[in-house]
Length: 130
Image 1 (cartoon, rainbow, N blue to C red):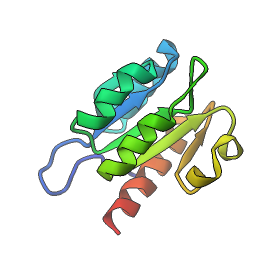
Image 2: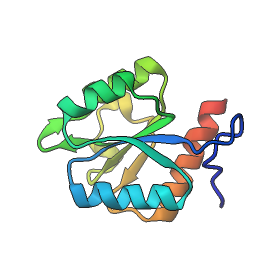
Image 3: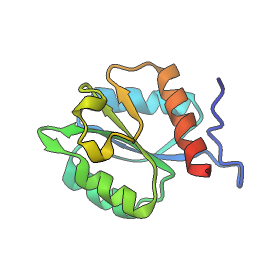
Image 4: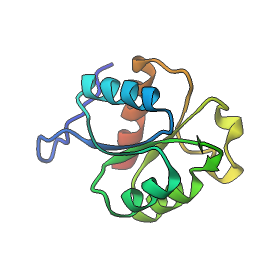
């Protein structure tokens, strides 16, 4: 499956926000996204860093680690919902670790491979079109 990481309306790579507290995972995710043709335009490792990005950054989607050093990422998710920005939860807990109201959002079970990331992002952008 080939993801169309470029926005067909303007030919630019889709912009992604990464919120992940583990630096090595964040770097790996950035490499995977780059390989798939996406552009990481904002990243954060803590909730207090992520909130202004979720509120103001120009992004097309976000990937959110559910637990940031013991803090829930849900305030960040709420801001993205308010803006209509699609997002994916990345968690070692799987979907069952999400609050009931967020279980309809795409989830990446850690650890995940690039192919899984590619498929989930494709579904996110297809759903956003609908």
